[in-house]
Each structure stands twice: as C-alpha cells, then as structure tokens.
Image (tube, rainbow, N blue to C red; front, side, top):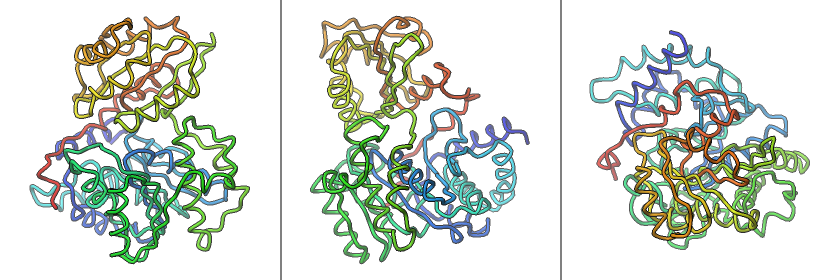
Length: 430
C-alpha cells in the first residue's frame, strides 16, 4: 500500500466505533509480540491539560538526554502527530509498514470482535516505540482510562491532570463517575500524581489509590512552581502553570529511576511546544490570531481567564465552532460577551453544531455584538482579514483547520476525518 491507501484503511476502521474494554488491545498486542513489555511509560489521564502535561514531560526528559516517545490524540492536522519520537512525527513509510504488519493479525479476530481504529493505532505506537528503542514513553489516554486501550501498560507513574465534565455520555454524568473512569489507570504500588481539586473527584482518586496501595501525590500550583524555573514558560494561561507543576512533581517522584537535572527541567519547560492551545500567531501585518482548542466548559473558562489577563484591551473578534455533543450553549454564554464581532462556523466534523444555532445562542447573551454565520472557516478568514485581534476556538478540529489554512501546518490530505468515531454508551461496561 501507499500512504493514502493506508490512511484509507485506517479510516475504514472507524466503522467499528469505540469498544470500551482491554480484551482486543491485549490480544492484538500479544499477537504483535507484547511490545508494551519492553518499554517504560508515564501514563497520563484527565479531562483537560493531558496534552500540555504530556508535552512538558516529553520536553523535560528529552532535554535530559532520553529518547522519548510521545503518544497523544486527537491530531490537529496529520495522523502522524499522534506518534512521535523526540518530537519528530512518525514517517509515512513507517505508518505504511506498521499497518501492513498488523493487517494479517487483524484477520485472526472473529466477527463482531474486530479491533477498532484506536485499538489498532495504540498497538502500532507500541510497536514503533519498541523498534525505536525509546527510553521512555509519555502515554496519553484516549477516552476515560479504566477501559481505554492505552490501559494495557504497566507505567512508572500514573498522572491524572484534573476531573471536569466532558464526554458524560460515555464516562458518566457526575464527577465521581468520571473520576472512577480516569482513576482506572492507577496500578498497584505505582505512584499517582494529580492536580485534581474537585473534592468529590479527589475522594474517588484517594480511595482508588488506597485500595491499590499506590502512593498519592496531590499537586497544588503554588507549592511546586517557585523552584521550577517556569518564568519563561512559553504556553499562555494560568492553567499551564498547574500543568507545569504537575509535570515537575512527576519528574521529582521518578528521580531515583530517571534522574533529571534542574537545568534539564528548566530547559524542558522553557522550550515546550504544544500547538493549538492558547497559541498566539502574529501575522506579518502585526494582526494577532489566538488559536485555542477549548471544547468544554472548563477549557473555555481557562480561555476566558487568559483573555482577560493577557488581552484586556481592544476589540475582539470571535470565530466559534463547537461539536454538537459538547455543552455548546454554555460555551456560547461564556465566550460571546467577550467579543465585539462574532462569526459562527461549521466544524469540519459530522458532529458539528449548525452555525445558525451557535449564532442564536450568542445573540441571547450579547445582543450588541455584530454576529454572523459563515459557510466555512476559509470564507470567514477572508472576512476578518483586517481585524486586529481574532480568537478561533470551540474545537480542536476547528483549530486544526485554522492551522492548515493559515499555512502553519502541512496540508492534512483529509486526515482530520480520522478523529471521528462513534460509540454507544452501552459499550461502556461497568
């Protein structure tokens, strides 16, 4: 196969939806030679901040001289973003080879039990990181934790960033239920580091840690940052300081197993790069565009706080697109009052909220703003070509499209569609 054909094959795996449970992934990994047994992991779960925390951990350990694998999802533009070694995307030829090697193994699964897209990609990543002789893998969960395909590994540390409302249709409708799914990555005797501060969620994590005899380290932003040298942390937002404190605490917990100098920590934090999260782009004519993939209420609150602190003056233009299965009405209520001009656009997803419905929700809370709907992000970018400060937000899918249209990322060749999947709540077996 060629690379486009390989991507098409992976696209076809979406038909199998998302089956929550570890049986398929364990079986596929076994057929592939148990690659997870040859690697060391830091497993990261949580509602928001997983990607940023993973990026910080990767950067610190790479600065310390390790060969570091990074597994994250979803991708912004290219499927290859999901699997990186020392921040270099997996090559197209490697994607083709690995899929070709896994295809015969997939035929050994009976009808009705075919591995899903995410299960196949998880084992692909494990095989690749093993072949690349990675010293450490920073391993982000896909959805939840307990029954997520990534949970077949035995990590050095389990990290839970925070617990907020998101994906309630699959993870549960209370913080306690969501926390129980995320805390499912806790392993016997393996240290757990968390910045969770919601009392009901933290109680669940504490209970799970006690049952698994896993040391629990609770991170408060203020208690960790003074020694971290994060004055030059390039990622905007106060929440990133919490993520940095969490990454630092994790490094401290693992010092005996993986020593890291203070210099490597400082350099790692100062050089961290994580696109699409409060990413400020200054164009040649000095216009500024802020790209942020905030797609749930907690993420949007962090965006609002960052806007008020870092960009308080001047008129703001908001370009907004949100998925239908998110709390889009509440998101509109939070963001619309902060803008003088608002364009609602379709998200490049079959799950997108119609722009007209977003516009109605925005008008309900900011009748004085100029509010318009756009048929596409490309069209709207042309209409805002003279606006001084633009915020594009509401979905990582939308931010990925913006990065592509602004020439800040290679063309995707349609690979953003690989982020799409369907799942029935009944598949989440408790």
